[in-house]
Image 1: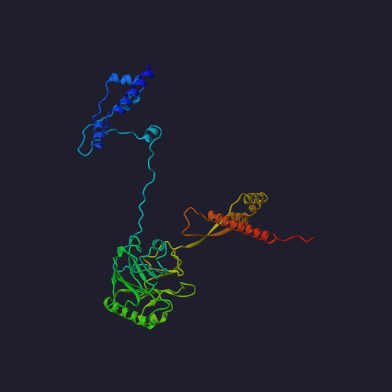
Image 2: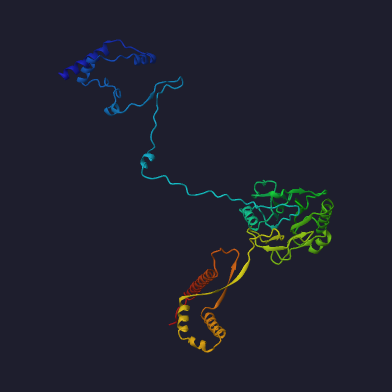
Length: 451
């Protein structure tokens, strides 16, 4: 039956295609049939399904599946705007991480507390305030980390004014590069030639201002700053200068004379790197006094400080944190001397060990203390007992000395310091023994015993 029906259908289609006139349709007409296509009657669709000739009658996705039908309906926003015709689903999806850890762990409180750090020292500025000085040839502040190292030095030595030479700053370097917290920076760069340059750092609370010579000459690397009742000058005299040394001395003399006329009662401070400039000549021509009497680079007295009055009681040459072949010079008055200067003191202690206790008890057991009572005088008996006890104490617990510094923590006692010294000594001895053994082993490695 099915075979006959299929055969008859093919005959009808063949006869229709052969004896019917051909029909040509355009693209638009074909597309029109696409939209006007009617759905076949249900009876026809059932017959075609029964004959397995038309599977298109079942539209895919028109009813979806059972899981889709059973899915809960969401709130669909049916209000469509003119720009968008796609409906949106308004739902809030829960965070999987919150569901995972819900009820499993407690929220921990933050234990770190912010610490406020300030680098500004409380400076009591009075009419006769004289700032502390810090002088250094930095050999380029443009090096990586040089500004940070300088800031650490200024904070450690509590310096109010810092004179820095050989900054190597040029016009391309912004002022923000050389800024130090709590300080105002003034600089004078070397024009056209590389290297050189001077800078002065002054605490901002001191309200510094620039003082300029009436016949200022940019040839000389000299900068003047007025800080209260003190006028500070920073000078760098290079080894190979483009001017004569006598010309520089004349210029310094003229500057000091003009400052003396404008501010007759002010203190004049001239500091920096003078290199091979004659110290006596500068003192004779300017009338200033040199207060640095220690070498700052090898055996050479290059970095100096000249003052018009002997106001600084303490002048030291120290090693700077900034990487430079020069040492720094710090100067203080009696009122502003830094308390962080390292001081040393020798402390006396007696070492006590179990071995010493054993030897002391062994020796004390053999002592006859009844011999002390032979004298009738009580004072004499006490003196004899005291001498015997002191002899035992000095014999079995002798006095030792160790050096403590002001930078040691408060819990470092003389006994602890001696133990640390002994540990370091043993470590160095062990290291030396290992190095010597390795050297001997390598020395005799190729040695062979003769037959």
